[in-house]
Amino acid sequence: MADEARPIYADNAATTALSEYALSKMLPYFREQYGNPSAIHVFGLEAKNALERARRTVAEAIGARVNEIYFTSGGTEADNWALFAACQARKKRGRHIVTTQIEHSAVYRAALELEKQGFEVTFLPPDRDGMITPEQVEAAVRPDTILVSVMLANNEVGTVLPIPEIAAAAKKHGALFHTDAVQAVGHVPVDVGALGVDMLSLSAHKFHGPKGAGALYASLRIAPPPMIFGGGQERGRRSGTGNVAGAVGMAAALEESVSRLEEDTAHLLKLRSRLIEGLTNYPGVTLTGHPEKRLPGIASFLVWGAAGEPLVRALSDLGVCVSSGSACSAGSGEPSRVLAAMRYELGGKAGEKAAPIRISLSRYNTLEEMDRIIALFPKAVETARQKTALLNLD
Ligand code: PLP
Image 1 (cartoon, helix red, strand yellow):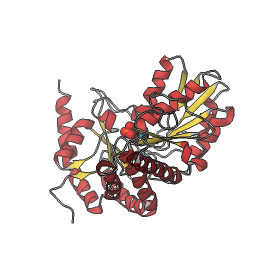
Image 2 (tube, rainbow, N blue to C red):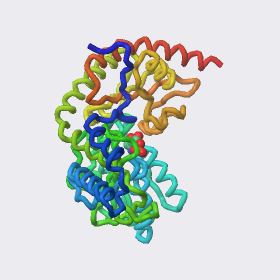
Image 3 (cartoon, rainbow, N blue to C red):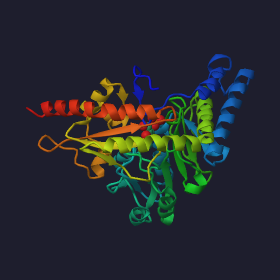
Image 4 (cartoon, helix red, strand yellow):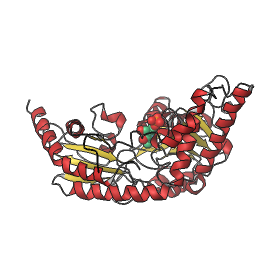
């Protein structure tokens, strides 16, 4: 039975609950084994061993070699590092970058910054489903293209992109290929060899690991130049005292997610179908993102006649915690760049408004919760539509 008093957490693309298993593995590194992994006494060695074991686990989970994993503070740092490092290393070869209009800001804004620094960036437009094709990439790359960065799965609509084919197209002229796999790792099978990528970003808090821990995979063929200078940790490429508990928690959460991937996927697909069927039965609700090629846990919709923030608030007042697009843009009141790129009109004052809603699930959600969301939805939409109409009165 669903607990009526407890709010439903359905914003797992923003962040997930730390798993009990990951927490139990982390605790000793806060309590007894708090050494600095760079120290050469026993406390330091214990910490260093834990960090290296975590590196091996992360590497094995994505089919990488152990010295191809660099720990970072999360997905944003890994994305920024991949873009700036590739441009730094390759700027003598060319100054052209290809990416997409649907990237997370961690890639998108880094690309805009590189544009300011004199690089030329092509931002590929998605189709209506949020899809980017290998043909688009192939048409965009040129002899002076030094980097192509295309995300593996989109964080707002959940569309999963054909990265093996895109990576192959990207490499036609020898460009490096990076993928932001922050929403994908721990949720769909990810193997760097099968994907054919040179660099890949991941973040622990998206798969039931701790916040503030992530990694950049960089193939041995490339040595990413450092962006953070200091004590020379991470083989001289990313200085700063290692986040031992974070890395241990990330490794444990990833190991757990990979080991139960099939079971969790089956569960999520059941919940997602129930939700999509239930919500799209209501008038004025449409599914966004690719109908099949999407992450098992993300259902995203447009709700016509309402604005995003009033709808998220109305749902929250009824105990349903979801988000309007990505967590980062949701608070800003800005219309979603990603949905605009997918050619959805989210409405100005004169036009009808449409509220983007992202409902993102985890292994901890239940079918009962889906039924509760479906049952509460009309009331929230009605409230949001009234509030939106009032906002439009002036
Ligand atoms: N890339 C994608 C696709 C994301 O969804 C996120 C997080 O929202 C990030 C990057 C940033 O990751 P982090 O929160 O670990 O900095």
